[in-house]
Length: 158
Image 1: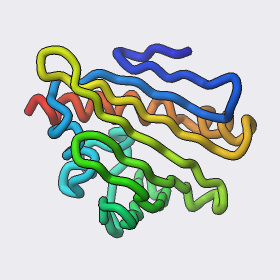
Image 2 (image 1 turned 120 degrees about the vertical axis):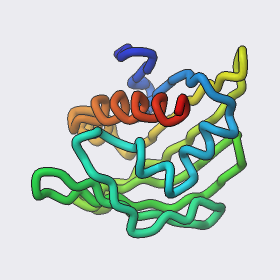
Image 3 (image 1 turned 60 degrees about the vertical axis):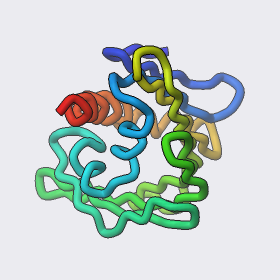
Image 4 (image 1 turned 90 degrees about the vertical axis):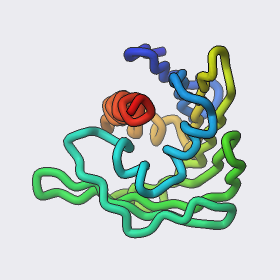
């Protein structure tokens, strides 16, 4: 397990899954809105060195998304489908880096109200193999998660 700031990142030993946990100083409806509103998502998702440009963002049951992270003359494109979206409670989606087509993660983000109007977010990401999961982690995923959540803290405070 890695603990970075308040973020925990755990690699499951029985299935190729990454589990990310984080508490935020905001109620579930605001943390959820930051995950679903296209005007907000571009302000925090991913490392700060990247500019995020949305191709489209349709966060609803059956919707889809595609975005680009740009930096240093490079484009990193991502896409997926939203399967289940329950306001202030749950998002189930797929996630694919277009640079590695066919390597798709199934992700689940659960938003739980905790003490003093705060939210506990637990995100799981399941892939096809342990090798794929380990490559995902080695790609800099932890840095992107950590920086993104720090940016989300600032957005929620602001």
